[in-house]
Image 1 (tube, rainbow, N blue to C red):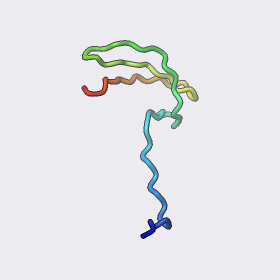
Image 2 (cartoon, rainbow, N blue to C red):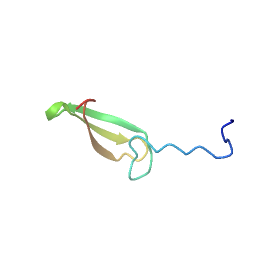
Image 3 (cartoon, rainbow, N blue to C red):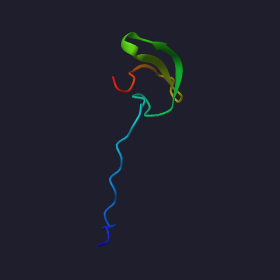
Length: 62
């Protein structure tokens, strides 16, 4: 039996960081530092509008 190709595939959910001001997904890392519990804190800047935000990352398996 052949698969039904008439239905479009669902679009994947958006991934990654999106700037709340302009909607751009391109960022530059301004600085990185280690935080408590093995976390990493990064200060990022939108390449389009210049808005800055802080992100916190944790290692996989934690």
